[in-house]
Image 1 (tube, rainbow, N blue to C red):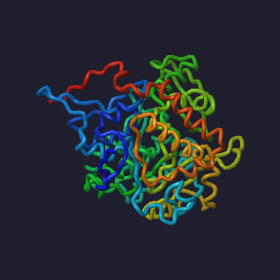
Image 2 (spheres, rainbow, N blue to C red):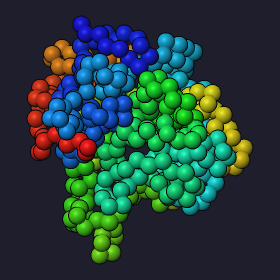
Image 3 (spheres, one colour):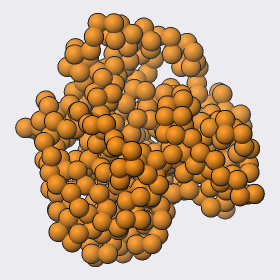
Image 4 (cartoon, rainbow, N blue to C red):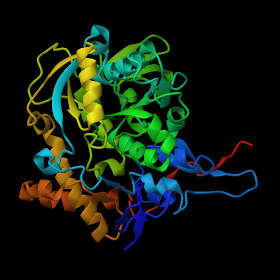
Length: 438
């Protein structure tokens, strides 16, 4: 059994990848970009349309190359290699720790009507980030937004004004590597807010331990509930289903302008078309999710100070304005949320903790299935992530017998259908390493 160091210096046992290249080739990369941030002279993040954002090796000017070695800092924080809660993180946690640390649960929405309407579910993340900057507790918010020159792709920016922060409102169901630009946070003149998917936040927390200066600059982490990241091909397919060429699209919105909102595009000739959330995510996007997302035990941002998602514990009314669940996971998160409520950047109220599993029943069953999927991978001789302190066996036990069997049998089928025994990088259309600029 291999051992690998995590960001805190602990030894984590398990048959897992030893290098970043191992992670990529084992189809375990989430595309967070933390390795490229920690090893910028060795790795660069590139969008591989069929898979997602991936770290590719940089060829140095003297002809050598690096691929993220076993002793490099990247593998120690990589969520594709594993996730691990601190020893006492789940002490006294409700639900047996299966939903991570929880101090409080709120239902909230932005008091800015425009932000509430444009946001995916009430504009809460935008409101929290903007309030942190406006109140002086942060100098900026690290966010993902659409690239102006390539609207189907994402970029990571450190937004510093209310206008810029709320301008990034709305979900981006496409590959993103926010951790790649943690250098913007490390170099900032004060504390920052970091917003990301659960894997992004977990990697950020690990990177902050590896880089103390980064740790001093992270004032608040906000995790977004996540059911997986589709590849760029997913968005392109939705656009084509709408009868348009992806090359002609100048704007794409995955949600927002209502709750849950519609998938909307606008072309360079002014044509506007849309699909419902069910038509876009349910029928197309989710089919393009990367494999690492299918074996992820953390869909609700357990490593964040605050995590935010849809309160789907009840049937939505037609035209109902957006709302969000806000899970308070740390004292820093509690302080930030209460300050935003006190200053009326947000409105909301505490709700019973039971509303969390009621809002996301699919995520509870998915966590149980993940336990069986990872076990099946190991039994099949495939590398698999090591998850420590993320209880999922009890979730698996609660599954119906037929679902238990399918969680293992279905994994065996996916191993063959997805080609998980073949190195992922072998499938890349252009495997040429990127040259380092002198």
